[in-house]
Picture 1 (cartoon, rainbow, N blue to C red):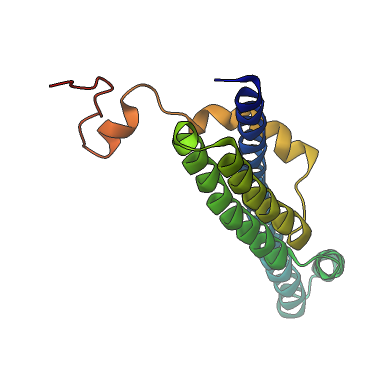
Picture 2: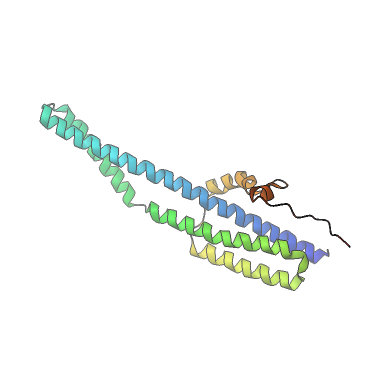
Amino acid sequence: MDQTTKKLMRQIMDAAGNVLYTYDAHWIIVNRLKARYTRIKITQIVLTALSTGGFLASLIAGIPWLSWVGGFTSATALGLNLYSLNFNIPADIKNHTDAANALWDVREAYKDLITDYDDLTNDQIRQRRNKITQAVSHINKTYQGTDEKAFTKAQKNINNYMFTDGEAARAFNVEEADDSVDDK
């Protein structure tokens, strides 16, 4: 392998790694947003139930301090609802999910390029690399980015995407390909 071919491979491997990190970071953000959304919704339900229960109990039982409980929880629920108006968490979840799904295609394109690498000329490698780079650029312009927290966690998760020897073959219940070539 000449120097140019080695440089191309290093560049492609680095780019593929960055796509893998970004792909994982988007899913980390999706999971974080889903958890936040669930907490907000549950809190809204609990606060609404407490405020309604407090008012009803104060009316039925005639206990004035329950009105204060109902009023406080109602005001807290209102504050949480106003806070929620500033964010569209379901849209953010969809946006990051769509970005991750688009990056899946890019990830697979890089895997294909790396697999076919030895059978391609440097010009063919560059053409495929450039096409993939354009796809990544389009994704980066179309979807919101990730954050440092998610990217750092993605770097720790990288081993989740690697198979030990024979693991993939066992997962799909197939025999591993024999690397030796029979010259008969």
